[in-house]
Amino acid sequence: MELKLKDLRYLVAVADLRHFGRAAARCFVSQPTLSAQLKKLEQSLGVQLIERAPNNVSLTPAGAEIVARARRILEASDEVVALARTRHDPLAGKLAVALLPTIGPYLLPRVLPAIRKALPRLELRLYEYQTAPMLEKLHGGELDLGILALPVELAGLESRELYREPFLVALPAQHPLARHDSVRVADLKNEPLLLLEDGHCLRDQALEVCGRVGARETQDFRATSLETLRQMVAAGAGVTLLPELAGRGAYRNASGVVLRPFTRPAPARCIGALWRKSTARAPAIDALARLIAEHAR
Image (cartoon, rainbow, N blue to C red; front, side, top):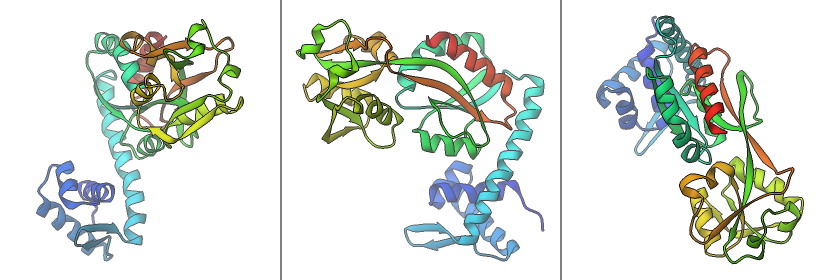
């Protein structure tokens, strides 16, 4: 029998989306076409891959194992195509890049103009993911590059430090510490600490910094974004830590919030780039990482 890459793409799409209609839309085919091709694939393999029930699509155990291998096959196929294209122009074509939600809105306005000027033929596809799904999609070949906080488990990935980003303290405007030019970590002892919800690495970093001095997390509130945190600080609900880029530009003078640096040595996070060791887009990734490192500082 002969396996077709398009059938494997259909199968992976169904595995990802658990919905035939959405999987068909991702693959730019009609739902009947996708369903029929997957039926043929099951018949040719002699095993059921998908459990079909009303309002529920799931993989059989055999289907889950085959999907895992199909992802590797598709990744290798995409690498072959990308490698051939980059031989013609390594700094052209599409590049799928993901950033943490606590990085993207604050970094991109600083670096995108320089990227467009220096790499005009590079077509960026930009996404926002938290760390865990970003790593999964990097391994799965859906992303070429991730911009996130280091360190993380590499396991087949390469990393590169781009810049170090100090934390700032965000305080209600009437808070006594707002009168200081800088704040010591110890000054936050017993302060109500506003944090992001689980899954954000910035939450863990803030807990690590502030937990040492007994700052207490506000238990009845967890934010989905830095801007929600900023609004809660303005309302006097507590204090929080913000990455430095989130306190620059248009975000510097948010109403009701005062930003103060920490005294040295200030706690900071390391922002880095992550990509697969096997990537065929190394020249484009290197050029993009250099630009981000230069303009983020």
